[in-house]
Picture: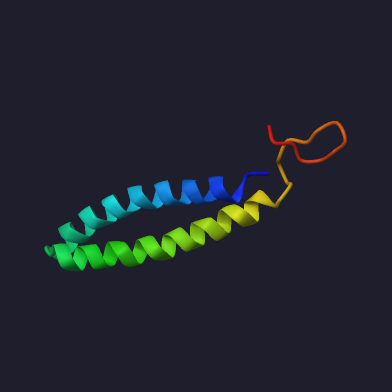
Length: 76
């Protein structure tokens, strides 16, 4: 099972990439750095929270995860 700290770091790095790309798209669509930035920040906040929840849910699901010799989910 993945640690909460690792899930948080993954979500944070993913959202940093999303913030950059959404800022660029927001600017291209609106012609305004302020409007594009506001759109990007809102999207980033919502995306960060939903991704983090999604990762934690999947971290607890055993389907498709490797199992050890006792049938428990392994870290591998």
